[in-house]
Length: 279
Ligand SMILES: Nc1ncnc2c1ncn2[C@@H]1O[C@H](COP(=O)(O)OP(=O)(O)O)[C@@H](O)[C@H]1O
Ligand SMILES: [Mg+2]
Image (cartoon, rainbow, N blue to C red; front, side, top):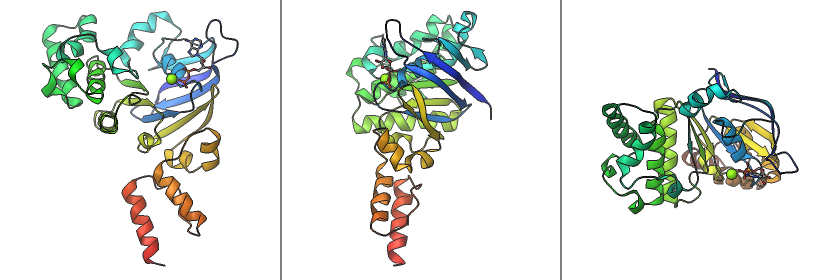
């Protein structure tokens, strides 16, 4: 596997700010992987996301996307086509009065022939499970459905990478579930690279890698099993561990010795049942 997004010692300060928001970040994201970015408010998550499609460029250091330096303006269009962004508020991302027109908006702006646009709109809506709503008015949909339409709009540009900045923050539990299972499928079945910024630990359980940001630096990174089982780190960063890890941790304090690396609910329940049976 090769690195599709690379940050090398990236420093960034917003104009007018006194202190840096990104203080020498280095990270590497593998092509086709599902990476979750965590960290408390103000830790730099959105600033990192904005460096991934050249909305921001580093003051020093380097960001490379699909082999292209984001600081080179001649790469801008190609980078923007390769990296689709989805933001927190679905209402701010909807531009048309009919779902299919909304999804067609970006490819229309790219000058893609209309027959191909129609195909892309249908296949994108199909991928997010919203094809049957193609003639609907977006503002009548639920938050989760709107967010899936926003994701379809990004998919219609056929990017290799999708960056989602707290896409579930305004959704109810069912909407959250639908959005997360949609993006997980895009990664696993359609081989897209997915970068998910989130506050919800349970959304990161299936990620290949978790990156924890703290005050503009990378505090930890690794597979979720490894990061989430570091209870001291999680507490220090103001992050709550997934429910499964918490239960195993509490049981260990009562004399069990479970590994804290079983994140799936079913696997965790089975492990506890087995341990109780053999007592
Ligand atoms: N538009 C902006 N202008 C000035 N400072 C900003 C701006 N956006 C973010 N910051 C600052 O950058 C730091 C990181 O913010 P951000 O990347 O939004 O963090 P997060 O997404 O993790 O909450 C914060 O200290 C914040 O105050
Ligand atoms: Mg943010």
